[in-house]
Image (cartoon, rainbow over all chains, first blue to last red):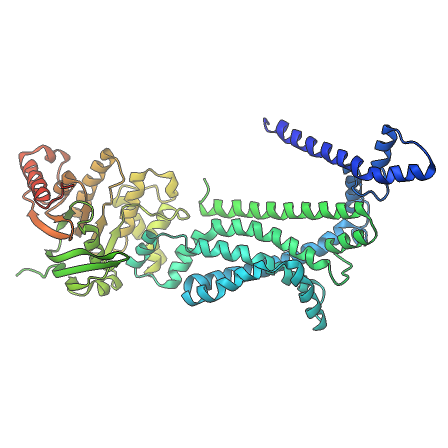
Amino acid sequence: MKMIAPVLTVLAAILLLWYAATVWMNSQWTYDQAARAGEEVTFSELVTDTLTQKRPVLPAPHQVAVGLWEGVAGQKVTSKRSLVFHGWITLSATLAGFALGTGLGILLAVGITHSRAMDLSVMPWAIASQTIPILAIAPMVIVVLASLGITGLLPKAIIAAYLSFFPVLVGMVKGLRAPDHMQLDLLKTYNASQGATFWKLRLPSSMPYLFASLKVGVAASLVGTIVAELPAGATRGLGARLLSGSYYGQTVQIWSALFAAAALAAILVVVVGIIEQITLKRMGMVQ
Amino acid sequence: MTAAPVIQARGLNLTFQTGDGSVHALKDIDLDIEKGEFVSFIGPSGCGKTTFLRCIAALETPTGGSLTVNGISPEEARKARSYGYVFQAAGLYPWRTIAGNVKLPLEIMGYSKAQQEERVEKVLSLVDLEGFGKKFPWQLSGGMQQRASIARALAFDAEILLMDEPFGALDEIVRDKLNEELLKLWSATNKTIGFVTHSIPEAVYLSTKIVVMSPRPGRIHEVIESTLPKGPRPLDIRDSEEFLQIAHRVREGLRAGHAYDE
């Protein structure tokens, strides 16, 4: 465990910087309060006060930790104050959108690698789709779908899919084109059909590329879902939690929701990584 | 009565169109390869030896002249799966075991499961890889991987075996051993073999017929019929007077064909 010292050092440095920033950014409030009461503030009073404010500009790490703990363990999971409840809402839309986006990305990639016309006609639009800021398009999608009577999980999943299909598409196009001339020539000498070439060579070759893309895609899905939860007054999900926190100046709530989202993203990426390890190991592609 | 040649080329030409003009890769190739022959193609880079082999395999299309394989066009022969092709790199699929790799052509060609198992076992023993079927390619040495790729080309019983510098990337000791095994395998199976190589000793040791080619444009300079006995040959035949004479003729042929210029 040689690595533990540097890891802890970096962590400690981050916490230290954070605490320093907390004292500095919250000091204005403390000074204002003291001035109003006509009192002087000593340095130790300043530190104590800035780290324990109810509505700090920047909450201290331990405040966020407490907020997270209460959100996760301090509530019934069905409570509207529970981060598990909101996390599940976000997670379900993320997974639905991820599945949708992955499926779409793979389908388009298969089309693009097999048809020159699709390559020329679809790829530019796929790239263009990613240059539009998601924050601009998400509210429109939510509003349009709501006017059609579609609310809840599906609109959010669509936004998530919108963000996650692209890395899968790009990765799979690369992966399906990974076999070199020699491998394609070999199948030609067997007079193999296009289908056989796809199933026996192109698809297996693309697996490492697919998993690399899936890791990017699953994180993008989560971002898409949270963004989709921000507009139009959603009341459930981590995005809604972020929004209501900012309405009421509940910075601890915002930061707790942020950390919950980050943890969720990390878990999702790790899970994809584990599936990758298992799959590639069973395929004999990792030693 | 003699049977028709397995491979027959008459006035074969191939010109590649590239970005900066056309390249005359093959010029007026005339060649007959009889059934059961072991024919080596030797020459410097750019002499068209690999291109000619690829024409036989219908991986390239000649731009002039005629070429037949088993009396039909190369394209028809490819569709009839009449040849096995061995590339310079083994090109085994890393996600398949050795047995799985050998099975690949059999799966594509629709052999039954039982036939697949039987043939895999047979060809793996032909190339001395019994017991390695369950290993993955990365667990085998380069020489063993190349043997597996030969097994893969043998699996579907094609009458013709086309080999494009199959041992080019291997060290000399492994190459000697594989050359010896290849000769044994050839005598045991009576296949017709086309073999591209850079190595004079390899060409002389293996072949019944050596085709010396010269570059720019790629053409046949000379065809040398080997007087060495047909069938398995001991490795030390390479020290015999007869062997050295043939090797000398090949070298002279290469020199006269400007192989040593530049």
